[in-house]
Amino acid sequence: MDTNYKSGVWYESADVTTEHTGASLAEIQKEIQRLQEEPPTQEELDGIINYESGIYVLQNSTPNGIIGQLIFLDTHDLDESFLTNKVQNMHAITPEKVQEMTRKYIRPVKYDLDSCWR
Image (cartoon, rainbow, N blue to C red; front, side, top):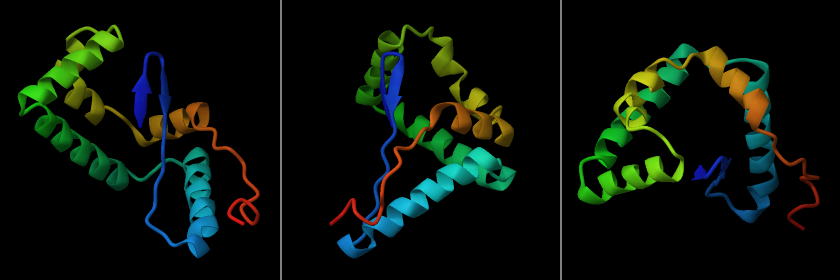
C-alpha cells in the first residue's frame, strides 16, 4: 500500500506466468469479494497483526526507519501518539472492522479477465 496525504493506493502482485495472469486476477478479486461478504477469521487476522507488529518494530530499529516514521507523521498531520499507540491499535482491530473497511474502501476495477491479457 502506498499512502499519500489523505489517500492511498493498494497494489497486488503475483509471480505468475502470462498464461495464469487472468486466473490470478480473478482469484484476487474473489478474495476481495470474500472479505466484503465475510470477515476474516480471528486466526488469520492475528497472523497479519503479529507480522505487521514485528515489521513495525524492525522499521524503527534504524535511523532511516525512525526518520521515515517521522516523515509519515508530518505528511499525514498526525500526533506522535499515532506511533506510540500503533501496535496497541493494531491489536484492537476486529475481523468485523476489516470487513467493514473492505466494503467501504476497496473497490476493485472490474476487468474482462479473458481479454485483458491478449
